[in-house]
Image 1 (tube, protein in one colour):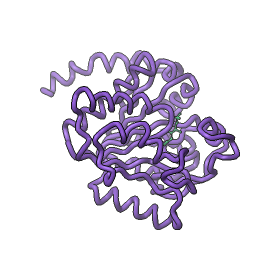
Image 2 (image 1 turned 120 degrees about the horizontal axis):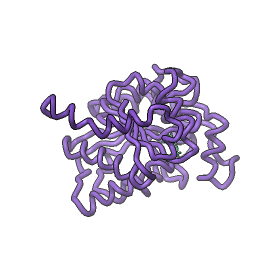
Image 3 (image 1 turned 45 degrees about the vertical axis):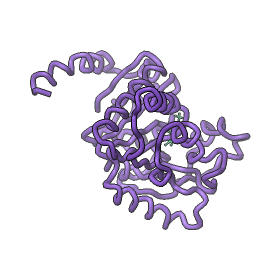
Length: 263
Ligand code: F6R
């Protein structure tokens, strides 16, 4: 894992947007996996700016969102589908036909989940998957104990996740108890992974998933098994990392190696 520590939320957002933009420029029909939540809002704002001011072209890309609350229609104001339209899709030249978000109010979640996996395969697999991280270590809604082999399916939400996400709803009782989420196995098949984290509330879990053991109790630790995972953190989220100086030194000296191998 490459660990990039940035001073604050703004620079974390610009750095992660630059990584995504770079991939879009390299491959105009990129298949991009996306996350919702507070963390990527700044990244999406910066991507929208890059589209507006620098012509970053989203017209050929396909996107797959990680998850959706079970029971919420795509038009529901708290659905992740709405979140994506509000925060990114409506600000760029995305084709609505290539913006996939699991349909929360599906009559048959099992059929929908299998269909979602098929669409990912049909698109050629995910080139770059963007992830946030929950305070319990979840990626997508893969709560503690999720198998590293898991695929898209319905998952019950952990108590802490319900409490954390209550801020988006009128009350805690309104937060759906289940979600449809890509599995850890689905996520690990992405060719590249970018996880972003911000704020003191994520410091402990960032230490755990980056420097602790690989365990399904902290599903983000599965990223240690991936051959191309970048983690972009702000200082607050990086506060409990034990090898911070080493990560910074690597970041500052990477160009030396790249020069030596002629890249
Ligand atoms: C959302 C998702 C979740 C969030 C995580 C962090 O699509 O997959 O794993 O990334 O719950 O949420 P925030 O960014 O709100 O702290």
